[in-house]
Image (cartoon, rainbow, N blue to C red; front, top):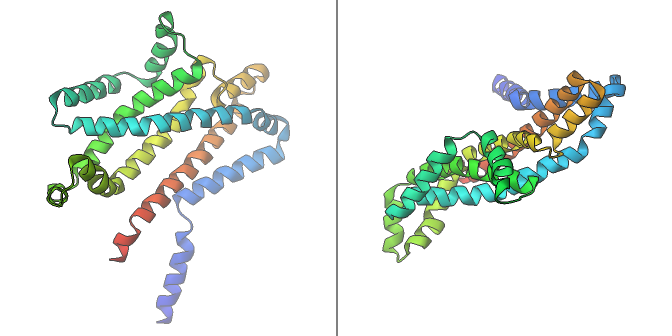
Length: 254
């Protein structure tokens, strides 16, 4: 009994040390060490970036708010029995997934400027939302298709219509399967916001480029930017993991 208790205690101690915690605390320690030991370049870089970080978060939040509903509609369209809706959703997915996000950003901001003037923020949100909406559409479609048809038949036998069956029976069950890949897409969306710097938007990447162009401190600047992106994405991944754990909590108790 005593050796088993010791083994369990050691296991709990080592459970805290995993790849996520090692990466997060390593990145924070590296950022703190650089800014403490060499404040002249690194702390100056860090103090120059907060405005860009705000823009990055703004683009990310707006894009996620648009991409997730668009992905849901696309996924529902992909499984729709209406041929016109199914064809429209499938065509949207095939076209958007075949064009790089950077090209989409250029097209909306520069090419369409001939007919319609839109701001950099609007162009960025539209491009990222449309791009990731197509990928999330496939995630939603796969998650919904993973639910057995017996669930739909049981709901219909209770008098639910198709809308009620989908939103009260199918989607709540499918969300457990959908959440991890959707969370990964949201994290990838945050990282891809760095592409909006090509439109001279003052995001985190653009602010860093401006600072590096003035001071020629390219190594120091991009080191700080990389650490900031790493810390943010690690925190987001832990948030997704926590939500996934909460969703599966009652299943584990069975």
